[in-house]
Image 1 (cartoon, rainbow, N blue to C red):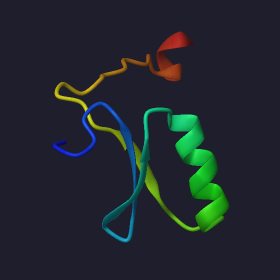
Image 2 (image 1 turned 180 degrees about the horizontal axis):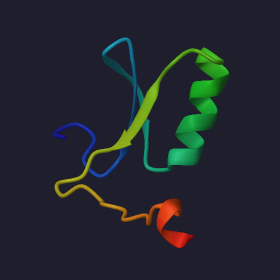
Image 3 (image 1 turned 180 degrees about the vertical axis):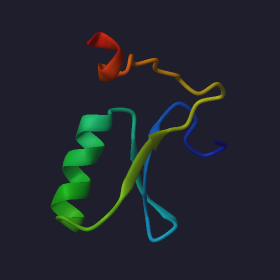
Image 4 (image 1 turned 120 degrees about the horizontal axis):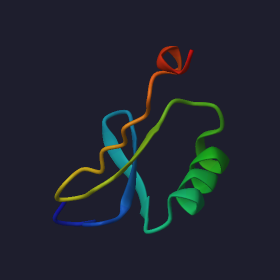
Length: 60
């Protein structure tokens, strides 16, 4: 949070390997660097964004 507040960070192997203000630009770089290897991208926010998505089972 201190180094990249409000930015997206990419984690691989338990370490921050890249960061950017735009998630799509970061993802594109990560795929170029790591290909299909596992990595995680998350936004560093003081209050996390919460999305409420209704269950498809409730739509029936």
